Length: 162
Length: 369
Image (tube, rainbow over all chains, first blue to last red; front, side):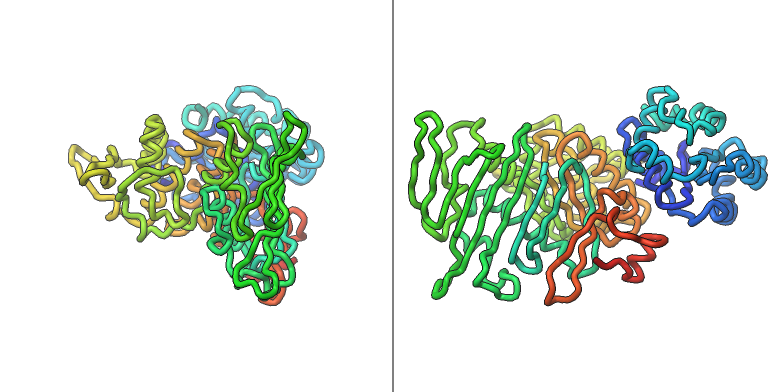
């Protein structure tokens, strides 16, 4: 069945197809409870991620308290500015269940730097989460995610990983 | 694992090559008529040979020649990695002038480059490594030799290869034909799922632990399922019944009365259990998203991909955007055909420039090779 909206689950809203492939690669990892994660359709740009989140998913976030959401976007070299902007768009009452992650520049750069396919990157990131290690997450293009990742892992580990 | 499929002069497949080395799962996409199901038809020929059908006339027909071009041989080649060795099987068929039925022109099985047998027209040659010589015999022109050459043991490459071929799972299920009744056991599912009951019985008969895999999967997708039974209905006859439970109430439903989508869940469960029990299997599933609700498609595809990740291989076709989105550019093959007069072309999605959203490009018909 689809994710059970009354049980803890995670929706991932990717900015574009490379981010979508990474998210699907994450769910492909055998350590991941893939039935508790749903990768949504690509938004088509980081601004649209925020717009779609507000227009389509805000009501559901309030209706279903077990729902978490990852906004997966590119930071185009300005991670702190963008995170601040996005954070201002997330209402206070659900802020603890919304997480903003992404590559500090673009996924293409991460793929080229690591010589891995997008799915493989996603799977490697899931493995690190399952093993409770920083590993791949400490790559130069990803390490800016650390505080947000720690917050996410603490929240989702009980239901997302075996 | 299938590494390469080569087909020539068969329907719309001319000089067609599908390379799936190191791909535990792959997706074929393309417009209607682009040749996706013809790939399944080619694979079905190999499966039939593995299952003992060796009359050429039962495998292909005159009309299967591309554009009726009978002056060019029809060629099928398959390369498979099994237990660390590459098995390469070649079958070329021809229709000489004044012949009414196709005959074998060439046939060969190589394992790691060494011939297990080779054949030219009626003459079959089997190397005898111990003596250093070779044995020769003749087989009817209209019979494929692979099924009739005697196997020495279960470790004989012939046995390994034929068993793998016979156990390939090629599916384009039609739920209305899946009634859950069985009058025997098999490990050879039909493409339309019509013998699911027999497959289910055969799987549980030989590998009882498969019940756990099936039950685990079904409880994930149908949470109120309590159990399922293969109840006897007569001598050697059984019928599958599904027991549901919720709030202390119980309901027993005959398999035949399940919805089309629920029948596909059962089929998926048996595929996953079979791969675990007696795999690694090769599975080709034509449009697995058929009959499923949008909320189920993504997880259905993911469950298949995950199951075959550590053993076996699955290739699916799809027109469903949710299913297509569960694959990546490096494991998605695009098939295209300019017209019915031209052959199928194939390319990996990562080698095709797609501007913008893939699904929108598919909807607009903008992806051509």
